[in-house]
Image 1 (cartoon, helix red, strand yellow):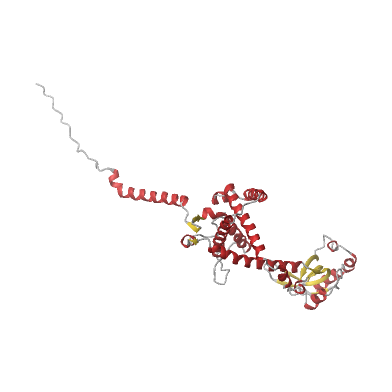
Image 2 (cartoon, helix red, strand yellow; image 1 turned 180 degrees about the vertical axis):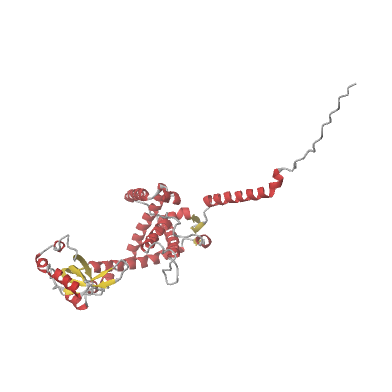
Amino acid sequence: MNNSKKIQTKKVKEVKLSEKPITSISKPWLITSLVLVVILIGALLFDQLYTPNIMTVDGKKYNLKDLSYYFYTVESRYASYNSMFGGDYWDMPISENGASLRETAKKDAVSESLRATILYNEAVKQGYKLTAEEQKTVKTTVDNLYDKLTKEEIRKNHFTKSYLTKMIEGTTLVSRFRQDKLKEAKIDEAKIKAGVSYDEFKQYDIEYLYAATQKTDSEGKVTEYSAKDKKAALDKLTSYYDKAKTTKDWSKVVPTDETAIIYKTSNFIKSDTSTFPDDFKAEIMKMKNNDISTVRQASTGYFIVRMVNNNSSERYDTEVSTAITTEQNKTFDKIYEEIKKSHPNKLNDGAIKHLKMGDLTIVSK
């Protein structure tokens, strides 16, 4: 008989882990995440593959990619204005109706895009084609432009050489079309020129030696010299008077190491605001070529003036050219408005209002 005791194994209570699938627990979160991912991918694809149409001309739709050259040209021009005023000018009002530089630039870009497209279509309709010489010029222009563009600008605006060639060909054709239409309009340039007063715009070219009697600090504050310093400035300028009377090239009258006396050239017409007192200005206007004034005092210092040309037509010619250009623009605007009527067109205001000039086609430095 086996007296050994039977050892009983104590049963340990089995702890059952939940058999509920993890996916079942996380399902709401999983679905939400998937939906967000799908929306994000969809938005990216939508942005890349779909660009809203900005306008329709003659039944053809145009989006920003099609018109990026016009927008880039206008935006670059306005960006230079913005830089001139310190870089914070985009949202400042610049027109009487309160429109900002940004809004004005967009209006111009849309207007120029529409105008160029309609005029190109009309030129083609009338049988215009590029000449062999124009094609050569287009190629040179495109090559030069492409070399100046940065990689970022090329990528951002889809500026391939073929695209730029197409756009420059179009503007070249439109330019010749415009010239032809203005010739047909027979603008009376002689009449326009006769309407500009030569006496009013006759230019006086002068050169002068100058000794300042005031100084301006970095903040623009002007401080007058003391009576003693003014006397020293007058004496210094006077010491060069005899040399000035016998020297043909006045740029060599003052030694390069002289800091108290400055040599400058200038010009004016009688209606210009001048730093010279009225009586001195009137005296200068009566001077003959190569005449030299006495030492004269103005609000900012002492001057010795020599008349270089008392009958320059430069300002008059500029005024005549401006008047003729203004008349040409007015005339062609009327021609364009008539052409526009025969080319069905429509702007997509809903898409245009979302365009924000400032970094739409240009790349911030």
